[in-house]
Length: 435
Image (cartoon, rainbow, N blue to C red; front, side, top):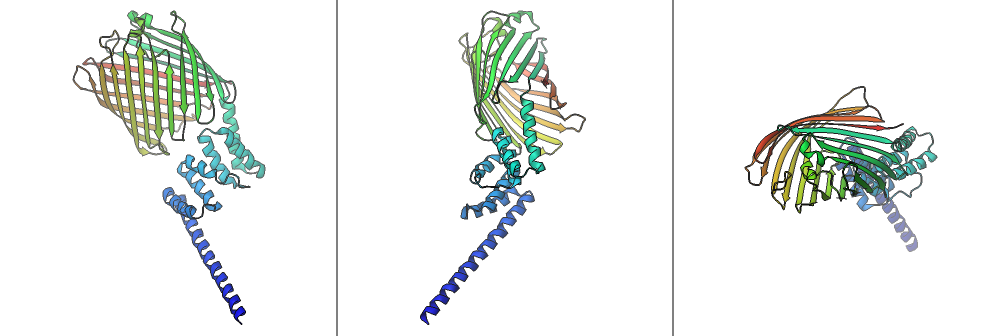
């Protein structure tokens, strides 16, 4: 009798444990479905919070981890999505919609090889899946397109009210050498309408290469030489790092800086330049930030340090219209006064820019117009602070996957040595992939 009662107690305890487990599984399933429902309604953060709380308790629940990853891709957080995907990447037979979402993120972070491999794996299991086939073909098309030779040409001019007009021309031809390396040849010319600065004109020819070590590290190495005047050979090395899909960090050293004033070059003065830069944007590009600092060591013993930073906020972010407020700050300091080129001992500029982007429906693949208004203040050592203002209009055209064009015209009122000058500028750029 005692044995019978013990067996009954054990059975009742087991049944109670099963009931508790089933009840817990039911609650988990309800929370899971509720989190996904919120995410589908556009409430990504609320949905992710629910699924995250479930994963904290049961991190090995595949369906929840899978949906957590997919919602992260909806939110645009590819870094977190790919990090979570590493926890389940060895699971056999992943769903096609998971492969599709993860592949899109791999493309966004430039890991094309992994995206292609994952899509190939998905198609081998489901060869009739049209979405996977379309994504795979899109990657192959982009690889083929990027392998084509490319020609980029930019021409620009600017003029002050004193009548000094400067011109520039840059032409660059590049082609793929390997899957990760692209070689290029570049010609760069600047000149002034003022004959006094004719010897300051730049006529540089450069050869270089871009090489991706992986999807995060990019090296740009160029060697160039002045082809009209004697000497002035130099090199430029830039290393870019993309730690996440939101950040870009860069370091560059140029033994011959091309952004040197023509007045300085006319006096046979040159400089090297070291630059650090960083940029950031949120997942939806509502917030953007850029910052850079440079040091120039001029051959006339002047050392120049510059700082530029800008932060932008899109208060309207719609499919056909974007409006942004951008705050820009520029500061420079020089160790030598009285140079032959314009170079105040220090200056500070603060500018507020309002930019509207118009996405237009035309017969072209893409057409975007930009209209910007700026208002700011400028202070130069030895002079009082005065206002600055300007307007700029630009257009971008993608005629096809092979050819694009952009141009812009601007009018601005600036302050130099305490005096006001009007400046006009015009730039046009054409890019074409050669068949």
